[in-house]
Image (cartoon, rainbow, N blue to C red; front, top):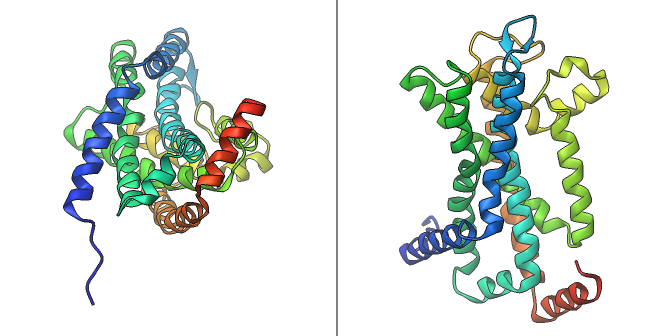
Amino acid sequence: MSTPSVPSTVLRAALRQARTTLARKYSTPAGLGNFFVPVVILIVIWFVRDVEMLDGQVGAGGYVFAGFLGFGVVAAAVMGVSGELQTERDDGTLLRAKAVPHGMTGHLLTKLLVTPLDALVPIVPAVVGAALLIPGIMPSSLGRWLLLLLVFLLTVAAMMPWGAVLGSVFRSMMTFAWVMMGIYALAVVSGFFFPLTVLPTVLEWLARATPLYWIGAAFRWVLLPGVEVAGDPPAVVTLLVLLAWSVVGLAVAPVVLRRMARRQSGSAVAAARERVLNRGY
């Protein structure tokens, strides 16, 4: 029994589409606006660079920087992917992809190629700036840099499928906006920018039940070696949990996406356009 494979023409088409998408996105004011966030983070790091946390184990600037890297992955892999799927469903992009042989496969491959680069766009200037503002925060050996790359790729893999699921499940932009606000709120209480120990126990356990907490713990493990944050699990456990979230997400997302694709039709796109014209969303 042969294993299904992706034709080479689909891979080449996905690469071309990824290049076009990135060039178009980052040649517009909206795309260039992604560089505004690292500037804000670097300003925050500058003001808190001398503040100490965790009984003097680490400066607040280093802790905030590690949290920003984790949150940047969440923003690109969850909010970015789900928001794009919402837009593409309404403007007919997914319907056109569905009509082309292997179109949905190529479209998803394009997302897989674009999302890590989307996450890197705000991270790279932040890394350069943090290296200047907080000497010693960057990995000091090739092995630590490789660990940072591994954590980055693993967190993207853990979150991108769930971004696709959210973009497929919620059909109303208003409902989707409330979901995104919930994710922002959850990110706040997930330990990205301050230890979970300052929160009520209920919120602490809620954060641990999501991948967001484990993403923050993974980046702290790489960037803040030797710093002990109360409640943080061993590094191996953290990576295994993120791997589990990746496996489950990659199993669930294709099923949900295929179901969404089956519902796409010309009448559904027309109804979405009519709704946007009448309501504005």
